[in-house]
Each structure stands twice: as C-alpha cells, then as structure tokens.
Length: 177
Image (cartoon, rainbow, N blue to C red; front, side, top):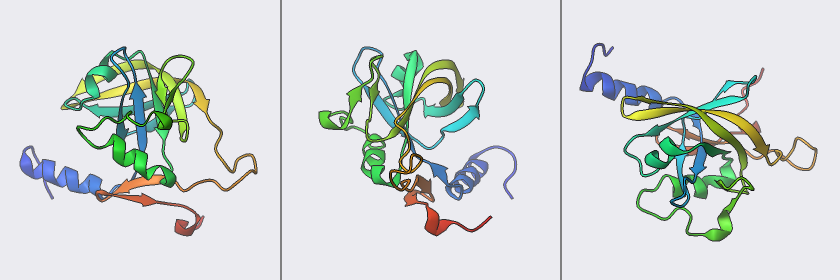
C-alpha cells in the first residue's frame, strides 16, 4: 500500500487508473484562433436535470488555453469505428483539423465531427486543480441519434481506453445481469 505524498503515491495512482477502463471522447472548441480539440478519457455525466457533463484538460496541453476561454464546447462520444479520430486527437504536434472532410461547423460556430455522436454545451464552470482544469458543461444540444435506437441498425461498440491501449466493448463482452 502506498500512503502519504510523493513519487510512490503518484506511481501507484497511475497504475490504479491504468486498470480502470474509461470511455473515449474528443472535445472541440474554437475561440477565434481556429479549431482546437483533444482526446479525453475523463468525460462523465454529472447531472440529468439540468443536463451537465464534466471533463478535465491537462493545463500544459495545446488545447488548454482555448478551452479555458471557450464559452461552448462540443464533446464527441467515440465508438470503435472512431479509433483513427481518437489517435489523431491524442497526437501532439499535428494539425488535427487538416482533413477538412472529417469535420464541419455547427450553426453556432463550433467545430464538430459529424461521424460521431456529440453533445454541445456551454461552459458552466472551469476549476484549475493540480496540473489540470475540471470543466463543467451544461448540454444544450445532442446529435445525431444513436444507430440501433430507431431499429435501423446495430449500435456500434463503444471505444474504451484501458491499460494504455484501445479496446472495443460490446455484446460479446457482456457478463450477464
């Protein structure tokens, strides 16, 4: 057991979260200097009424300054078919928006990835903590509908990050009720 502060606890903390699977999302925004975005495994539902979600952004990331100034963001919930997007938006030093055919803008101006489910919202709170900022978003638009809910196709397998690698989970991974 690691107790106290220091490198030992930090390493044990990292190892604990490597064993904890997380859904994968891409967060995008634009505050006037061009679109920014990053891959996030920290997205979580916070409240249904009002609809709130939360994510964190590392303060040293290239997207952090824009996220800190953004009035709104778009959070894209990725499926296994979006592995390429997850990898692209997690790669430093590349133009994540170079392929103009992979993204567009919502009528409200935010960049979004039309191939993924997305939630657009207003930044309700930003709280710097440690080397990151916690961002609370009030969701005011959701799109597109999830395949399978309307009976028009199977729901795609969610993309998950676990033990420093990508995974897909689906019916074949179901353990039962």
